[in-house]
Length: 91
Image 1 (spheres, rainbow, N blue to C red):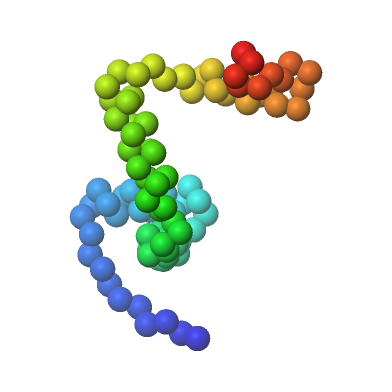
Image 2 (cartoon, rainbow, N blue to C red):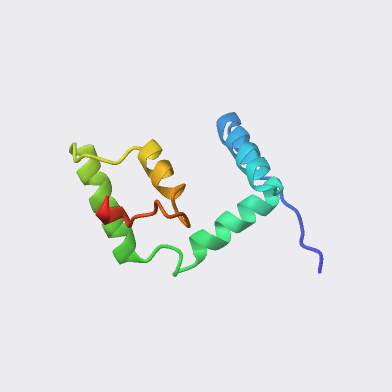
């Protein structure tokens, strides 16, 4: 079935971001926008309790709660499946 096309104008920054994100994911910009729209419209996409928990965690980080560096997480992930692996809490 053929879907009618429409032109939607966005600012330059948004266009560049959409193009880059689509390229990174191997999608066309229209496919990326369709996917994003479907996710945003899905009631299961963002359960309220999960969003509230993410907001709580972000507020804690902004308040100065310590975080774990990306490098530390990457080092830990690289141990998965090896004899050196330990659960995150056992480090």
